[in-house]
Length: 437
Image 1: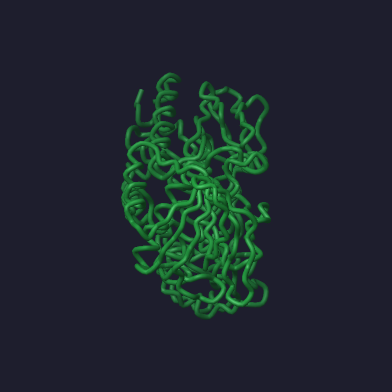
Image 2: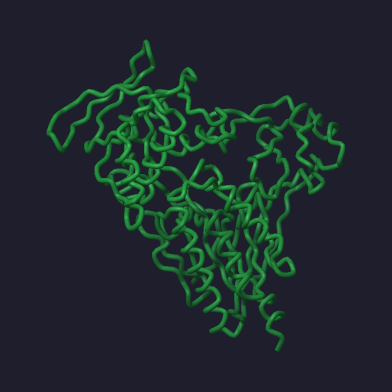
């Protein structure tokens, strides 16, 4: 039997094209001749990592590693990695012979084809604006837009919610390369696969539920993911850390830990990355604005393993202050838009009233997997057990169902890559046992 042909008759489906999903796909195809399909909701691969300014411990910009991965995808043997962006899984059914699954996919209309040169003429003539979710709605784009500078595939996309298809064809008329077809329709199709990896990532906790912290009420209370975009050169402020209310450069910033995490009324678990993220953000605030003096308000600072060196780097900076204590209700000083809150210094026992120009909330990680499964019609007998926090705690490896990344538990970028390698190995072991690899 030809092993290569047998592999390609038993492809793998990966649900989620973020860091974990892409890494798992690459590990599988580079260790075997298996074909892999990636299904991604967004119009590009890369996921939430691309929205970061830098990630620890090396403080690398995300496009460095992602460019390597896109090159690996393009050079995958015989095009063994196939991906479908702007797509969702609607149904998962077991094949009658029990050898795999038939999966129904729905892909949104692909209004832009591969002729796109990202010249931008379409966006220049577009009259409609939309909130820019890549920058967490801190600015806007046109209804036809380039999602981000690292977008893969690298082409513009159209937001159906804001584009006035019936009355406006300006973008189509402006395109010199026949790259736009506003009459495109959605694509519904089926894939036959032997194994499935859930790698659908995470979202920030809805911090408006913690009303005492003032997010959504006071403009200068932002989240840690918004801080990443403020610091990014391709972000809403072109890399200058300016507070939203008046675009003022900030010096006195309060970083508040465990905003939702480790709270029985919200997220009872530790989100694993928040302490490191705030340390990182305090360091690059100091780098971008040497006169700044940030303060980190924490319950416990958790920097496991070699990340302790990262903590030491921050504590050695005399301008970065640390306060062990839980922050009370945040209010706003109307005249200045500064923020005021009470906090107890648990080490000294003193209560303090603190004033800050901007507050950054270390928002916890919420897995997408639970919501995703609610939108998928799954055949009876397919066991995917979700724990009380929304993570997969028992995957049906006997039937070829696996998980990677934050679908399992909160992870940073480095650990997500390790998780992806683990899931890839599980897929190949399963295929070997079944005689499919």
